[in-house]
Amino acid sequence: MKHEEIDLSKRSFMKIAATLGATAALCPLSSLMLPDSALAEPMVPLRLFNPHTGETYSVELFSGSQWNKSGLLVCDWMMRDWRQKQVVNCDRKLYAALYVIQRKFNVSSPIAINSGFRSNATNRMLRGNSIARNGGRVTAESPAVNSQHLYAKAVDFSIPGVPVPVVSRYVKSLNIGGLGVYSTFTHMDTGRIRQWGRPI
Ligand SMILES: [Zn+2]
Image (cartoon, rainbow, N blue to C red; front, side, top):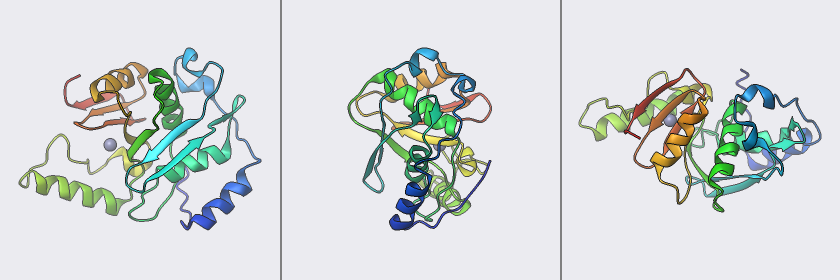
């Protein structure tokens, strides 16, 4: 996967978005291993909210049967490491899955993205904070040294109004990869199938 770092001023983001706007990459919808019904017409925008930065975007993720490149770019922006000002191309399967999850629960509020891509520095900091909060102990909820967030293959998110266990059970049914169940959010990644955290 390409880990492209893009300078993060909003102006440069808009410039990149404008450049890529007309170009659509092939969308391997059939290879997403997600239920066909979830991708049925009509397509709706994916709505994302970043509680750390207060940003909200409505994203057209697909253009017909293809990915909408500028939509992907907005998703990457919302998944960026805002602490270290780094944005990379995240695993598109996460976005497709968020789209499917949004359709499943059909809520009007946007999906809250608590954490997406993490640089090494941010992951180390979050892990250190978590261990410090737990009196120096590593717990199941401490960010992993080799977290999938480092590879832009993980997202921590919540759906307003839908309890975490309910969202987590649905994520599990999608068989995407890793599932972590926390008190206020669900961790979903595209690594190998595994589960940790609270019971669901
Ligand atoms: Zn996570």
